[in-house]
Amino acid sequence: MCRREFLHAFAASSVALALPGWADAAGASPAKAGQVMTVTGAIEARELGFTLTHEHLFADLRPFDEQADAPMPPDVEQVVEVVLPYLQAIRRMGCRSLVDCTATTLGRNPALIRRLSEASDLHMLTVTGAYVAAGGRFIPPHVRAETDEQLAARWIGEWREGIDGSDVRPGLIKLGIEGEPLTELERKVLRAAARTHLASGLAIAVHTGPWSDVEPGRNARCALAQLDALEAAGADASAWVWVHAQNEKEGGQHVVAARRGGWVSFDGYRPGQEDAYVAMIDRMRRAKLLDHVLVSQDAGWYNAGQPRGGEFKPYAPLFTSLIPALRRHGLGEGEIRTLFTENPARAFALREGASS
Image 1: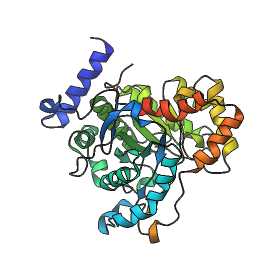
Image 2 (image 1 turned 135 degrees about the vertical axis):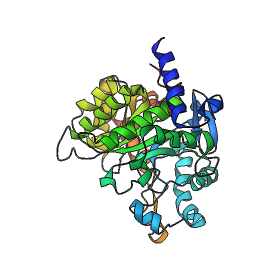
Image 3 (image 1 turned 120 degrees about the vertical axis):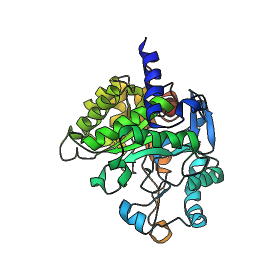
């Protein structure tokens, strides 16, 4: 049996143990390889166009227990009133898609994302997965209690059936990991993500702790340990996105991760950081690894519990300051297209399990 056949067999058999009826549903995938799952349905990856790969629309940053005890459902009309103009602005600038990376327990709201997607005429993606970073403040009890097989069954259920009773399906798996070394809980959710990826083809984007301002190399050690764990569970490196890689100041580690086949995401851009982002991107360019780079802003968002959502960080600066800086540095239009159109399409296109 070749590796591809083994991985497909592993995906089908191992998840079937955890999800009743999985074998019967095995032929009912909501999308196919080469497509991207948006909140309004599957599209061909090439239809994404210019894409912001890590942004936020609405978030609830209270600890999970507080959210459970005192839910704050959004005032949808007010959120749309506040957020929509920022989306319309980037639509006019040429943006066509936005990935909402808000984790499952930080305010993920599929119906709201779909409403904003339809109102703005932007393709949008939402997530499944678990966020076990930030000292554990966002971890629900089931993430601690369930096995990796059970967590994968839960996430695959969202992929197959829709999120929270809706027909909105995730377009990626989002984890939050900050252990260095990895904790057993983090290893468990990584195994669950690999199982989910093998069954769905979804990419795995992993928030990685921002310690390297204090200790260069630590962010990379955490990131590469994630990749080791995912590969050991059968996922290919090309399915993994190192989120917040800009926090690692040892730029050579970005090259290491990309050469292993992973995606390196510089996704916290703010006006005034042009020189730093140009330098990181140019390093990858000189290493002939520009085709493994994602660039975004981690901007937004309407914050639950704050008057009219609090301070909103707009999405436009990437268009008005970073891209012009990249052009001044000598990046051609083909390279801009690689970063913002071709790479997102490849990163978030559904894979046939963990291909190699």
